[in-house]
Length: 473
Image (cartoon, rainbow, N blue to C red; front, side):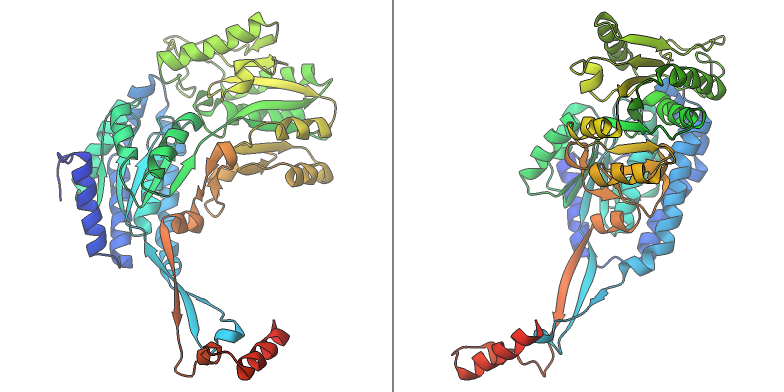
């Protein structure tokens, strides 16, 4: 096994993995589980070092947050993959139509070959190793390009992976946008990307030149709908948790709230109380993450400045700071009724700013959502099941959590992915396994097959057979 990162250029590394994948097409269960176990050992043996690296990249990001949002998720994923692999790998028998009987048919599940993974910075361990784990479980070789915006974490991950895996099994490549562009242009058997919609388009264009299938985990503006039947004191705790986890730097964070008109003051008071409960202090609080970079922090400040200048009411969290805070620990803010054409309402926010849009009816809320690109997530709060079911039936989103935020992503048996501009394809559980698997159709003909009845020259016997089959179809 390689003990240092591969010194081969990207194309040569791809060629090595490609050749290895073609030499070992049938990857046994024992090999797949061994690869999963090596990733689990990587996590367990280096959990503190990984948390420290994430902290170094963000400036402030609690090791407890990295534990629950990155490492715990990966441990759960590995457990599920190991447990279900024997069943998922088995050929699937399918019924055969009467006109092909007594032939037998099955679907044989095989690895695709070489899978490329381009990972983001916001959950730099989970969103790098998670797709890689599913691809390894499906029997593939993996090349990973982690984010250059989390250099400490990415460098440590590369070192740890290359200590445990041969370069033709699993390899990590560091670098900036130029490396990412070269990486996306490789003729992978599948390319998995997590990031912004704008970059996702460029990745899809690069992959299309080789007809490489892609999974695009993007983002967008995920709405919260609050029904009049909801208890605001309960709702705001859950919205604040979903919005301020990682300081809003989460692809499925609530992006805006659709609130029944007249409840603005009640919502503001409940939100202030929830922020104070979850984050008794802001700057200096290790549980409240910093914005990842000066550039991203400046962008968020510009979004607020624009809506203030346009006359929107901005309310900041009335929570004190502690000593020794970080400059990029940004104070959470509500923005009431920002202009629809403001950048705040046109761009994914990815920070602790929450627009609140008053609505006169559930119909208006549904129409507001449907007039925009389909979101990655949707959250509905209330106790009126008929109103809930109307929203579920009449809106389309990647996923939904009812009476909470974020939690659908934690359910390993639910597929996770977007729709339209929020993404293409899904993973988690068996859905993810199949995303990185070729399902080969196999028909085994019987020696008693009657297919010759359909051979030319066509005549009276052929017409009699067709007439008989028509009665069955």
